[in-house]
Structures are given as C-alpha cells and as structure tokens.
Image 1 (cartoon, rainbow, N blue to C red):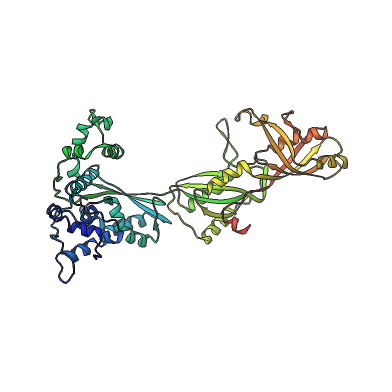
Image 2 (cartoon, helix red, strand yellow):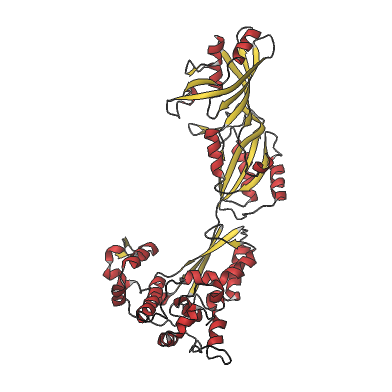
Length: 500
Ligand SMILES: [Zn+2]
C-alpha cells in the first residue's frame, strides 16, 4: 500500500506531462496544484515533497523525474507561488506596510488582484493536463486549487502569526495586493476578438472605443467556453515569461467596526441627531455628535453612522438605563479595543454632563439588527408631568388608573406631518399610572407603551387625531409639561444578555 499523496501518485503516472511541464519551468507548487493537491500543508511543503521524491535514494517509491527549476518564472502562476511572492522577505514587506499604516485587526484576509490573463494561463495548463490524461485513470484530477488559494495556503501561517489575527473567509481587514505582469497584457486579445460581445466597449484616453476586459466578464466567458473552443483560441504552451510579476500596490480596506451602548440625555436643549429646519442648523450639538466624534477618534475612523432604538424629542430627557444605540465606523484603522479602552472612552464621553453613555462595547454587524428590531417591537416607559386648567381630583386619578392595556388610534401628529405620511396606527398603552402632584392641576403620569406611540399626542389629543387621549378621558384639555423616557425595554448591547 502506498502512503503517497494522490497528487504525487498522479505525477508519477503522468511522467511525460511532468517532464513537459518542468521543461516549461512550471514551479513545484503549480505541479502539485495541477495534479490536484488540495492540502494546505502539502502545498506549503511542495519543495521538500518534490525534492525528496526526485530520485531520492533509500525511499521505497518510484523516484519522480523532476528537473531542478531554472531561473525563468513559472509560466502558470507567473511567479506568484514562487519566492517572489511567498518568501519571508516578501511577506515582511506586506506586514510592515500594514503595521506602519497603523491598522489593527481582529481578523484579516488578503485579496490578490492578478493580471486578467491569469485565469487564461491557469486554464491552459489545467486543460492540457486533463486532455492528456483523459484515458489515464491513474492521473485524472477531480478538483484543483486556484493560484490564489494556493498562495493563501502558503502565506496564511506567516501572516496570521505576524498580525496575531486569524484569516477567516472574507472577514475583517482586507489587504489587497495588486500584481501585474506586462508580458501578459495582450493575452486576452484572442478571446476578445472571438467573443467581442462578452466585453463592453468603452472610450479610451485616445478617444477610440475599445473592448475592456473586466474580471467578471472574463470569468463568465471562461465558464461557457468549451474545451475545444478554448484550445483553438489559446495555444499551449503559453509563451514563456522572461520576468517575474511585480507587486504594484498594497491597499488596506478596513471592514466597518460596530460599537454598541446605551445613552442617557439629561438636557432638554440637545437633539438626538443634528437638527436642521430648512437647511438651518438648530442648536450647536447633538447626542449623536457628542458620542460619535469621540468613538470615531478612538478607532481612527473616517466617518460614522449612528443608529438608535427610537428617538426622543429635543425637550425630552432620556433617563433610567438609557436608550440603545449603535455606531457603524467606516474606515476604522483600529478594529479591536480592550475593556479598559472602552471604559476610558466611556469616561471621556461622560465628561460632558448633558449626556452619558453606558456599556460601550464592540459588537458585530448582525447585532446591529437588534437595534432596529427594538425600535419596532419593544415597549418603552415614560414619565410625564401633566397640567390641566382645573383642579384635578382623586376621582380623575382613579378614572385614569382604571385604563390598562388601553388601545388607541393615532393619526400622524400634526407636528410631523411635513415629513411623515398621514396614516392612522393602532397602539397600546400597556400600563398607565397617574399620581396627583399638587392641588394646582398637576399630576404625574407613568406610562408603558408599545414602541412608536407618540406620547405627547396621547396626552393632549392632537386636535382629536389621537383617540382616546388623556384630554378626552378627563374631558378637559391636558398639556404635557415635561416628558422623560425612563426605560427602553431592549437587551442591549448584546453582552447584557448574560447579565440579565
Ligand atoms: Zn507556478
């Protein structure tokens, strides 16, 4: 029984192909890759594996006839899988670039932008193997790694340990390497002239219309081109390359970072978000800016998006345990923060006495859905100071308190009609608790309501647009003098789940 990997066994059974490929300077990784090797560790050890088998004495296996590689770059991967792009020296360049640019990460991934003809060359070699081995069941290959996947297999351990971060799919910081090879520039031409309609025309800098090859168009075309069509258009072997490929750019594309928390608002003069009336700014600052500017600085982000579970009016305080919010940070250089970092950030934001934040933490993209859901589904609790133009009696209070799970109809309030459609919604006042404050007609109202209930309108009635209302229940116009949000019933941020 042979313990040899299948890829090696196939190479042994395709001696002529092996010798053809080697004479064309196909590199060790590409040899294994084309022979169907998919194991990352064998791809990484391809040099040792092939060399050990290349006529090695003392091994109880048929030696592989692999000539040493010359100076010419591999025509299949145009040196991407050779030391030019896999050596520690090359990877150090990438690592230093990312580190000196100031990026930190929890997870990362590398994308390679290769010359368009890369796919054509890869397919040319695969097709040549498959055609030659059609009747050789000992050498037939079912699946192969692409050049990109093989590169990933080789470099992942080095990059992961240098960044102390994992490469998981396409998550986190994207490090893009742009790799060009001028000798391959015209290799798409036979496909363009044979399938012109597969490529869009665009005007070039010289004013002339030209078919442009995009990766997407080429991929789609290669999927539909048959083996025989491909062989007629792309001659095997592709022309030898005299130079290795070159790295023309490294670009870091950070993934959005999300921060969640709850905020409290102690002021009746600060709006939740920047407030404009006919393009004129009202007020100097908003809750959003007070929170997000500092978070943005901390994570060295370029911009932010602020999301909250509902909103309160400028003159409404938000107390209790605060209102859930989330911040999406765009272009953040810093992707991770320790608990201490977050505590310091919280303390820094809380230097402003008009607002406060609590429970700041980095959350995931999917967690952010919870906030929107909360806006639509969860209950909110309020306390309101109400005023009536007559003496309020104990009977009034008892009457109000007799209404629980009160179903109301609310037309869009007059004050928001200019920006919201005029519709009617049913809402439920789950609990209602009134308490007399003094003999001047003031009372306090504690309400627990369905999300999206307009509270001020429920109190004054909004010219009969909310029915019933406190005014209609008392048969007397009632004003909401002061309103505070005291609870937004939503478990947020996600780590609060464990505490509750
Ligand atoms: Zn190669």
